[in-house]
Image (cartoon, rainbow, N blue to C red; front, side):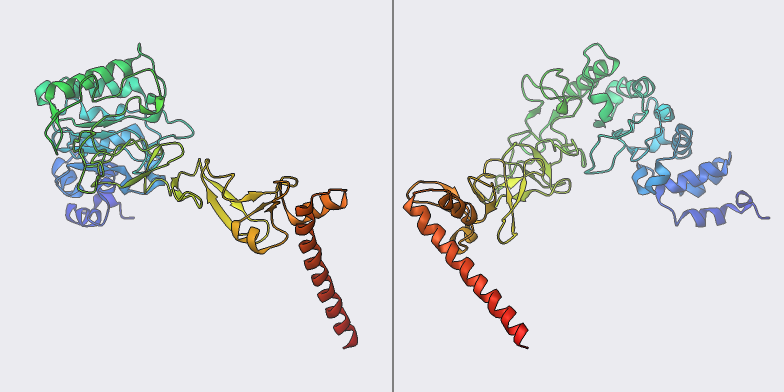
Length: 391
């Protein structure tokens, strides 16, 4: 039986060339070769400036251990080569496998959210990634001072949901923020210094909406370019988008488009949420604020925001059946407003009110139209049955 690890280095390198970057490194790790040149040939030599485990099958990434991550980082000499790391779908790791990055002066971006672009960071069950395992490694990078090239850290959702001013994580946020501020960051468009006065690069407030805690301001989470909140393009669109309420990331105008729900004022990436247009006011509405209502007569569904849900269809004051504007005009059974008593009733309820002793002349006129159509429909049914009987 042929053992794959006994194949010539050239053959193994040829096989690995058909694999995605993380898979090539995992292939080399699985062979357990201690020959540096052989390992380098299998992983492709370089450049290894970016590593995203989202490039491999999701099920495989979800099974990777800290030993696997550590092996990959050692195999590609990450501390000397890697600039961008995304641990997409690596939901089984605690983070100790990031040890080979300790003290890196090359790394620029580390995405610890464990999810892909435009995916919610709220994972269930909660992943085991640990502050105690990861933060000492991040501290060793931040502590390199002027040598440090780190531009963006994206933290796991489970770390950001607990706001404790006495925690290790909160203290690290302060150190990371201080490093960015001391380095000096400016808007790519207007060259103003960032952050703005009285604000910070990293959101560390333990008050207000927990949604923002631990996020990095003025920074695109994709290209890592920095923009202030005031700069706009020629169309009046801000270069730096508001934090997406779904994926909880900031994107610049060039990396992702977005839209705002006019009911709750939340901002969403177009790739995260499909905003609906309210039938009545024509404004954009997010899925949490939108209502789908259906006309009882024609069964046509209408989309309504929270402000317009009671106006997009007309409700019967007795049975609560809903009818669209078209049916209210053309269908005698739909809801209509009586000009005498100012009551909105559907045709059937109005007939019942009149039969029960109502004395409104306006209602009588509307009920008469209902009776007349019912009579015509009944006569048509009688004629059809008669025709079938005679045949």
